[in-house]
Amino acid sequence: MSEPSDLFRNLTREDFKLISFDFEQLSKRLQGSEDWAKLVVCHIYLDHIISQTLKDHVPNIDAYFAGGHKSFSDKLALCQAHNLIDDEIAMTLRSINSARNKFAHRLVFDVPDEVKTRLFLEFSPARPPGDVLTDDGFSNFLFTVVMLVEFERIYGIKLANIEREAAFHRGKMLEIAIEMIGGGAFKSAN
Image (cartoon, rainbow, N blue to C red):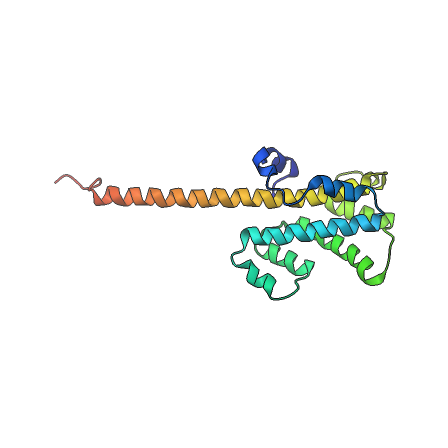
C-alpha cells in the first residue's frame, strides 16, 4: 500500500472531484457531537465508501447488494478478497465497526479514552497516543480515517484506469507486431 503522503501527492484537482461525499459536511458532523455520535458518523461514511469501492471495481456487484442486507463486515471482507482495501486499514475499520456495534447493540454511550487510544494507535502507531485525547483529537482522527479510505478508493480508480490503458496499448503493440511478421519484416534473405 502507498504511504498517505504518496497518495496525496498523486491526487489532482480532478481526483478531488471524485470524492463521493461532502467532506465539509463530514467535518461539521464530527465537530459538534458527543464522541459516540462521532464514531457512528464515521462508521456511516466508511460503510458508504466501502460500498462505493465495491461498485467501482466489482462487475455486477448490484446482484450482490440486491441479495439483501450486507453487513459492514461482509462488505469489508469482500473488498479485502478483491484487494481493494489494505489489510492494515481493514483492521482499523473492523475495530471502528466493533466499537460502533457497542452503541447499536449494548446501549453503551461512552467512548473511553482507552478505546480512543487503541483505535488511534492501531491506525497510526508512530504518533503520540495523547494526540487523540486533545479537544479535537478524536474528531480529527476519525476524519483522517474516513478521508484516507476515500483517497484509497480514488487511487484505486486511478490505478484501474492506468491498467486498462496499458492493456489497450499492449493489444495495439501486439497487432503491430503481428502485422510486421505478416508483412515479411522478418523474412530472411535467400
